[in-house]
Image 1 (cartoon, helix red, strand yellow):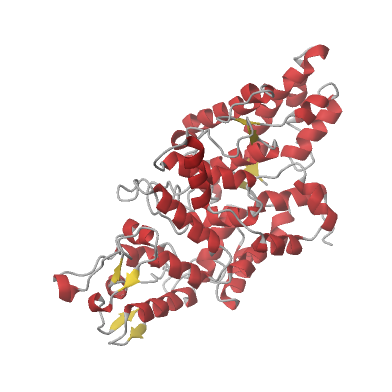
Image 2: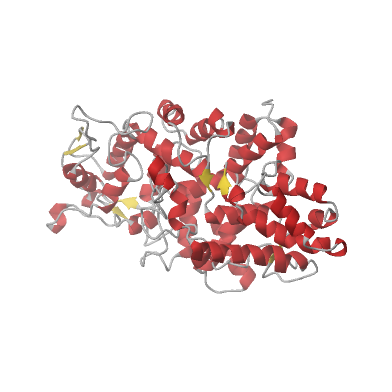
Length: 496
């Protein structure tokens, strides 16, 4: 047993799920074993995004699948799937291995985008090379980064498209500049950063990614190689020689191994994943510990996520990150055990997702994700050299819209307990209402549900003021305002 306190168990689950449900902390503390919990989560059966998107279509009686159905299908998984760690990992990977429906070539393919998300989910705990192999062969990725149908210069008279060749290095593996094992920039003898690759590497890399085509014009089946259109001449990439006469499949396997083995890949991917799960500013020792596991296990993501979540840093109270807006909302829904009305089984309210969160699954405006992992807001954080990536998409307009959605949930829907509308999701606030006449009991509920068992000192008097604003006969009507305040409070929106 790990000997965790309630607050520590809450913190661990907060980093590992799409939101902590009220019974999950006590259930976890029965075994009090983080490693065992992770192992069970890795083996937990999981929900397919394609199947949830199709369920959305069936529920609505539609002849076509829409982007809204896909996003609502994602919420189905986020709120109710038992494989919570896998869902959290899939969402993190979708922000590293980015595709997006804002691309004109993909906007008309919501089900195929769901299929790409399923690819990330299926390989969320495989080794990184295997994941990258399936991503590379995805026709969705091939379309997004224009690799599909890439032809050698001998066929066209021009160099092959370099889009995927560049991003597979810059974003998916080694990064722009050489890194030390702790994620810091490697500096040469002149004190300058050292680029990981140059234009010649990109040009040769693009030649490796020739000869891949759609399988029967399908956007769901993996691309297939046609060696007739693969550049089979000798290539030099990242100091490695690729001999002539080798086919597309063999060269793909070779280059992916080179990329995964590159000394910068482990600290680069370790840093990106830590930032998505635990803290926006991981210390160098933390990054190095995770990067070492990545390197020693050939990028085994099961071991990497264990290294991230079992590290002492998670529980030491010195780390923090801003909650991603869409994860803050999924937390609220899960914390209140929210369910559709009328015996429904799907999320039918899309929550104005294109406007509310500044992000939505597979909805990034570019391959560079919703925000840079190195974004520093101007002001105090920038002065301290601290990153807060999520703040790049959070402004007053976004905050107001998300707050309105939260208010609708806790105020409008929170009191429609007899509603039968399958178009809405209703929170279970019965335990809050039952305790409404006793502020001490009520404050314990808020502490356990939103703050890891301890009401912050600056929050308690504000909650009490909202409670005192209602007469003794009307205390239950204070609950909605108190829940709303708990959600929008900085103490909740900063995950620490």
